[in-house]
Image (cartoon, rainbow, N blue to C red; front, side):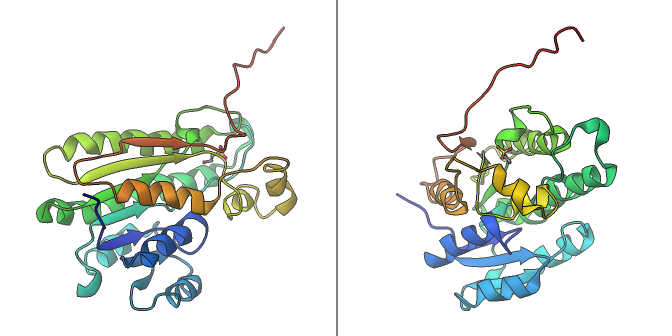
Length: 254
Ligand code: 8X3
């Protein structure tokens, strides 16, 4: 027996993964609350399925606003049974010793604080209704250390472990919890943001290889969310075939 969620909330929905998730679920008739800071983008997305997609302007760094908005959704979109906690960003790829502390704060505020506040706002309702699924977007950077990954990777390690700990807290409630952990993904704003709008640097990351696309990641999320209720994906790590692991570095004579 497969499962179709009825009402999804997607954070970071104005572009990239988030917009692909909104489209994937709305295409199947799921009502979706699409949240992000850029309302004009959300409205454009909502115009593709105005009967299903509710645009909701939300700054995840304003945690009071997050709680207010997610606990007072209009009746048509209130009984949320799927939260896709997607909003997140990487800022910089330089070594920790030269990093800008405000970048670290911003990653923590969005990737960690924003995420936990969204989850907390919707979790009790799911448990009360005995129906729901929280899907967090982690990253391979949460388990694979790499130069320049410093705080970004650490926020994703948090997302991984928070997700698995939630599985334990949700034991016996019927509410599912999954963490989807993609590797290199092209065609989104992610790399441009990472390199502060330097499109050449961003494109160089994907030169000569085929990265995952936002639509590929949306398929993984769709599969995870539509499995029969007895089947929970704890963690799913996905990568382009062209990406894999390298060994340790050795500083000889240091
Ligand atoms: C980012 C994944 O592999 O581009 O979340 O660093 S990777």
